[in-house]
Image (cartoon, one colour):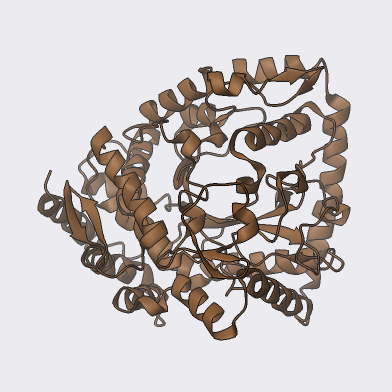
Length: 527
């Protein structure tokens, strides 16, 4: 299908939404954030302390947990129907955490602090229960397969689901006779395919990791240049986090997971989780009763597959992600491509989240034919190109088998979002979505306004290394949160109560364990 035909289909759908008689049809979607941060010492070294007990159990807490490392805090918000409520909750979480960190800081950038070697990165610990042990063994396996340094990278994930009232209206627009679970899942997979086509735009607009600490590169082959002593960079990079030296995992380069349908997605992930991979078998699975990894398969579990965006459903206890999707379909999408912004105390801001909400709506509404293998290769290359060279003058990307100027394509996408933002703005005289779109459009016209360019300009102006800038911003953020007054006493008490309850829940899980760890794993993977 040609780009012109795709545009015509999109315009018809958008016009139908605008004229549907339900002006708020896109409003009220649910959005949440997961934000990761390394705990560091005042000197900027990785914290070797345990996850603070006052923050609750990393195993069972809904809102304050850890990711790969014991030092990598992950803050998870509930979902909200307004962006300002979401950001306020995330701010409150930071304020609570900082009250229990002592002299430690939360590292203000995605790329890690100064780390000597993989051995300095402690694995997250979740207690002696079978599920807790499984989580730690899984992380040990990630370290063996990809190196612990890569796992110390932080990010911000944006979770979004469309309002329930949207689906019957959209079913009418696309002339579908049903709007149940299967229809919703199919439409979310439309979104996933178009995000693969257009998600490079998110890296250009919001990437803020054009530099890294040279300690991150120790012992690795790379092409980065020295910007200053201790700092390596790519001259036109936007997000080294999402480039070949970051989360884009060369070990998974040959792993293809289709998003042409829910069935194909579940099939491909299931095959990877159940297919042995000799190089991983050579690492060993169990030695002297100690597990080194969960198994020797291409993926230990589904979540090991890294992608820019995931289809998600809240899983039941003991249920694997693909089982949850197969049981009840797609509930929301998780956009995983956001860098932690050193220029925002909570790592993200309202304009960014509003733009993303409108952008995923664009990806849903645009026609979305299946992705063939050749197109997928080109789409992957576009993401890598923008991550590594997104600010390069005259940059071109692959589109329908032809190289096209990136800025022209970006302008076209943002122009297509205007009507979506008007729908999202209805009833609000401040027009926040239109404003958010205008702020991003300015970055297309002036590359100096991108956060990656701002990071490079800041380093050039101050003469700091990346490490020094990140440490300075981390200290400023800590001061910001500790100086907030008056604190929300009710919210802080709520977090304290949740922390205590999570510790009790962990004890209950540990007391209820039966059988051996090997039997537990067998049941999990047989399910």
